[in-house]
Figure (cartoon, rainbow, N blue to C red):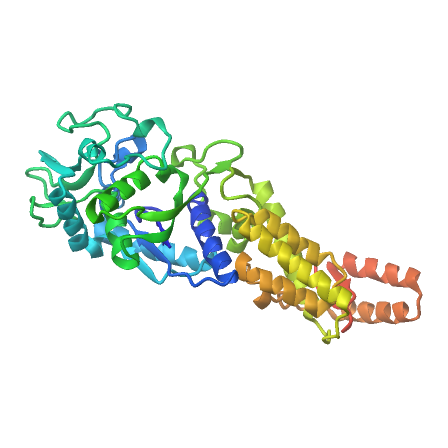
Amino acid sequence: MYTCGPTVYSFPSIGNWRTYATSDLLIRTLQYLGYSVDSIMNLTDVGHLTGDNSGDADTGEDRLEKAAKKEGRTAWDIAAFYTENFYTGFDKLNLLKPRLWCKATDHIPEQIAMVQQIMDKGFAYTIADGIYFDTKAYETAGNIYGELSNLAEIKEGARVEINPDKRDARDFALWKLSPAGEKRQMEWESPWGMGFPGWHIECSAMSTKYLGDQFDIHVGGEDLKSTHHPNEIAQAEAATGKKPFVNFWVHCVFLLIDGGRMGKSLGNAYTIEDVEKRGFDPLVIRYFYLTGHYRKQLNFTWEALQAASTALSNLRELVWRSKQGTERTVLSDEKLTQIEQLRQAFGAALENDLNIPEALAVVWEVAKSNIPGRDKAELIESFDEVLGLRLSTWEPEVIEIPQQVTELVTQRDLARKAKDFAKSDALRLEIQLLGFDVQDNQSGPIITKI
């Protein structure tokens, strides 16, 4: 499994993180269902040009070099800083690390070799600014160009013809030559001259190096479905002659913000750091992602995030309380059947096109069930192997409880044992007025701060 990772020139938005969380959920699901997963993710640290925003990824500035000018650092420093930030975000969201992070700049020879393969097969040509993939020649040889995409951008002549030297509007750069008289921070010698790889070639070269000419699953955001992934397919299959390059493509849909689009220019491309500044645990955004299917738009609002925070807190506390002071009991056949049915329902949701919202509903069905405490906790914790919410390790914050509150809790416990429920309720109200609450458990009362 190969996942298209970030271009490391800025902080990823929570929209970007939705794709990486989807990739993680897919890996966890496959492992839960008994598969062994060899996972690779790339890091684009050169070659992704700003023209991608306007429909032609072969034009504009390199995003790394543009960020370097803006921040007064080298492109290499920019890549190192934002790569480290991405690793930190990965940990905060409890995403499983891939077997290998593939950096484009670490695989220049492999990209040059693949470009040469494509040229040798007759599917590329040279013009003033670089080596381009020849879509017409590719189609003439009996191949289909534009698989996956049904967007207008991929149709012949639909994109704006910015470079008149290209043979076809759909042709794309495999290797860009450095402009004459200009020294780039990131450039390499090649058989065609000093330059740098096109954006698309890195993924074809690195995925086939580590996963083979043909592999199972490729994951990315829905924006990559229009040109980047079709270009990956064309490059890989042109170079290797193997079809299909990938068996299954998984594309995660964009996140909406307050019902509209997300954008840096709009000031709403929120990051994990923005979520933390608002006082939210990063795992709250992970729980929020679980509430929507990866192929459907999910609307982010701060109110929705607060609702996710409340739900996650309730689930954490329920699992923790269910394990406190309870001893394992011999379950009846009825309870064993109930647990097995819930396991099957959870698995069926996962197998139904990764229907995580449906799987999450099963989790809450368990939470509200009459399954004995420790067995309930263990069942939910087994589901958390997929959800990734770290439920098994969560513990409530240790709080200092005033002696007055402790004495009131003791009095209330005695009142409950004496079945004086009116007094018990009155004492609980006093406790709440002091900023605490008490929950009854088999092991005794549990005090929490309101």
